[in-house]
Length: 393
Ligand SMILES: *Cc1c(COP(=O)(O)O)cnc(C)c1O
Image (cartoon, rainbow, N blue to C red; front, side, top):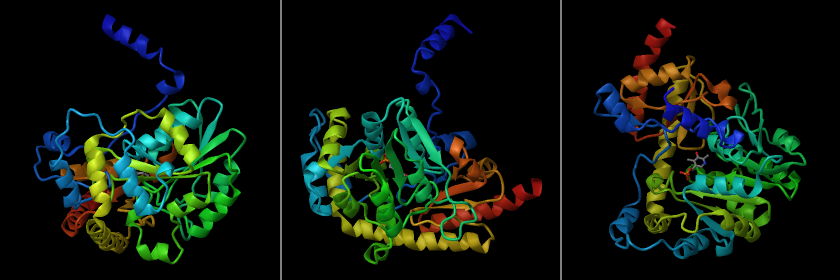
């Protein structure tokens, strides 16, 4: 090692032990990188659950109309909070905005977790729960999910097991509904029973990043729980939502949470004063009001999800149940090998099994639902690479 490297390593070693122990989040592979690496031009990325239809034209218009680059954002997010308040029938004091909902998950961790405390969540949960927890030095209590052989919800969150895992040091439960990267969900009845039983001093973070993709009929019939209604009923529920998925604003980084005003006030104390930028505020407000775009996105996804699930079943590949904008499929081969082979075809998907708690998904890939043409392209690529990989396995 050079003197500079030695000095760097020494400085890195001064960081908190639990920070040094974190393995960084691996994001979806960027299109440009794959283009450079493989000399390909027409690349399809279905790896990060982005909206294949783009964003609302009204959001684009709001951004084009924006001029005040020299002015700080409205740190209170007044106009967007008013719009969210009206849209979801919640008080403005119950809302906090975040730089993506990722920001909100971290604010919860910073405000509620520390060494000696723990957060409880399911195996195969969203990777950020572990990262945000570990960054505070708290313990991540990762609870085994329902078994792959479960009749209704293989790999789903086991709510009774999560409940049993809550101990005197637990301050937070993280639960995504539907969950990423599995697509699985918990029902209204299951979640109500769970929330009734969770001690009221434990904050339940209900991450609804994909809720807009769930069929409206599932809400109407009381099958699928509406976090907004639960947050009104249960003071220990904090619902997080994002503009990154169906709203198509992932580039801008904006999300929000709804919960008890006292909890919101705590989270407000640990956020950056200007955590959400002006373009994001304007675009999100416009996007929230464009119900035509949202309904169209939901409808296109529903058709694509059915199509992809059926296509995999026809090919004898098991899919995990999903109500989100992606499907996770068991490919019967190490996911990394299938991922690499698909890259060479110009298709970027997500290989699972990379985190400590996702070993059980090491032969699963997660594919975002695209347009019909995109979905067909993934299937063609898979039909090309899977037989070859199987033959050489
Ligand atoms: C994508 C996603 C988010 C949203 O992340 P942003 O920071 O809002 O872009 C949150 N939770 C889950 C489960 C997700 O999949």
